[in-house]
Length: 97
Image 1 (cartoon, rainbow, N blue to C red):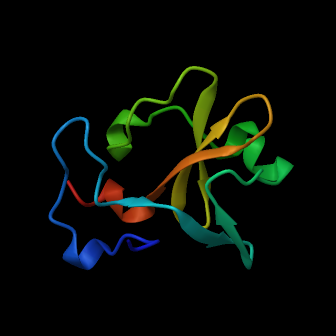
Image 2 (image 1 turned 120 degrees about the vertical axis):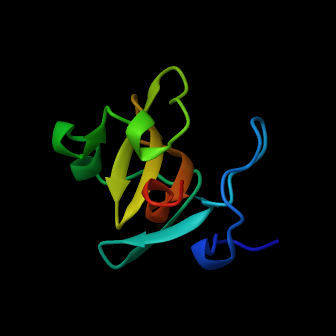
């Protein structure tokens, strides 16, 4: 199983309920690797990085108690309470639909 999505060979959006071809499990931000389950730096938990208009970016609705943020060119779903990474999407999802 691949750890990163490659937008060049992505077939587009997957049917509802399936993992998107833009979903990634690892990415880099600020020259540091991140993966699902990591805690993001406080900077990415601030209002300027929070994504409220997730629909226009083709992102799934955030789960209760979480929100989307922008890190290293990727969209990252983090918990409101601790900034734990729940999910990540390649930034190309914005243009891929």
